[in-house]
Length: 527
Image 1 (cartoon, rainbow, N blue to C red):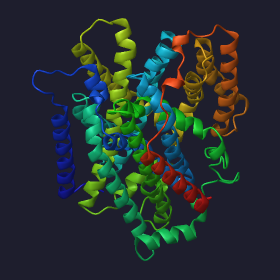
Image 2 (image 1 turned 120 degrees about the vertical axis):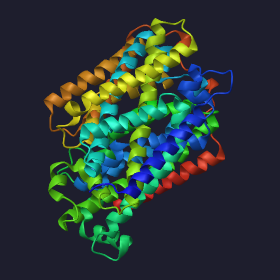
Image 3 (image 1 turned 90 degrees about the vertical axis):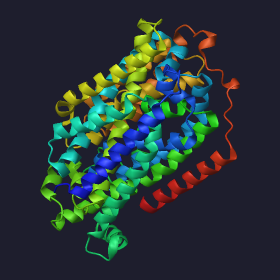
Image 4 (image 1 turned 60 degrees about the vertical axis):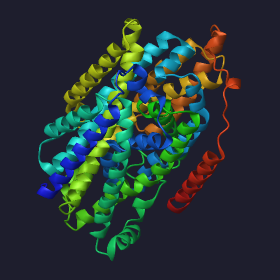
């Protein structure tokens, strides 16, 4: 299946519009040059709607659209736990974590660790995050995006990845976070409409009366794909272990990603004020509830479409990550261009966000520590160069790192799970335990990796979600004990919660209640 002239016109129009808007919002007034706050935090002037849209556009990347469509084909709605539980986590982060971060006026997550635990912990985590974002996150988005683009265009996976990387760099390197966040408003609209279009096309192609009839047919014929809590006999139980998806380590992954992940939380750090940041996260929580309906449902429909011979069932059985690319090929000319633009929107917004976060951490936490007396312009230039280098490395690493895995989505979750317990512990103790010190932080970070490796070696069949939960609980206790057996931290390093206002507006509280009520309803229906 190839792109026709009308598709190419739509895609080129989208690309030119995005580049034009990015350049327009990136321009500075006469006589003013970008400083680090402008480039890395959008001048701390982002409104709630830009924060919420950018959060989701950065998150709904190839990992979600392509990876979760593939998991929808294999597993079904149970994979939606990664989306729906995140909505609740966003509400908690907005109410209890953002007030602490914004009170301290930090640029990065490592900067908070430096204030709380010292430069050693900051440097350790800065190096780790730069390596993780480059070797895991960037490579995953590039690889999955390349697979989908290749399915539709035949450009080859490497050629497709290079094109995506070049476009993301072209519109984001000059403008920094402001260009990324404000263009993400366009990106999120396009990807939602494109995702809804694929869902409608997939359901409408089923042997039923229209798209709604197709959905009803799926529920009747494939009830096992509409269960949130898998039975132990299910082939995918090791990835989504039944009730443990609600009670176990999935929450650790969520808090690590949504609460302490630089390329996610950086939008909130660039907010006009705390109220705008909190409304932005509540807006993002609502959008998260929608995501499974535009990425997982099409994957489920692909099972029946493969049985009918409308998509290549053999290719999907061999590599489920090709599901979304196969479904894109079903779209008619014109709409296919919109869907293709939506995929590009998802991929490049995430790539741009990760590049900006890599450059922020590298420049502000590592480079500036070595060269502290350079000009603002110099640091902005270093940020641009480091982002470009990271993208180049990701292109080289993508195939050897991910080419041999059946599901890149689950692979990323497992990689992240080795350090996520330590990250969550370090921040939670840093917030709420005044006795937590540098020794306790090292215990959490190093202990998380070591204990994960040990438990995985001794109990290889243990689901990784359960393993992460066990590691989290054990290492949390160990870090608290070590902190109390060693010297107490200096008083000024502790977070004084008495100086921080955790009260939220009536609007935020109402939105939070609505999100929670919807979540309870979804789980009650799909249990």
